[in-house]
Image: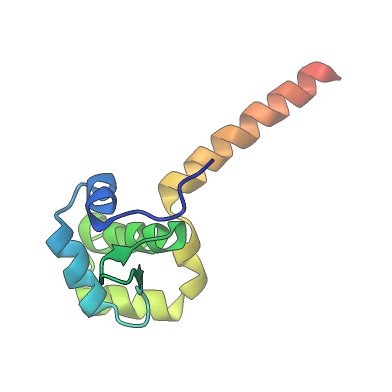
Length: 106
């Protein structure tokens, strides 16, 4: 069973950043990044939030966008946040394996 909610600490470890950076990005990307909070106010991140954070990380840390530039890219191309380049590669590897298996069955 896949985990539904993640803490800010778990998400920070996944991305290799400090939790304070994630909180900062939440303030910078209002309306784009909005994790739910439990009754005590602790952030609860779903997979869609982690995907969004990975997209922001990719734009800011890897591609060198400013925060304003990253915001504009996300607003201009909202559908792109659904998948990162690493996820594309992973999916292509899975598809290749599937096709090889299918070919062997024929």
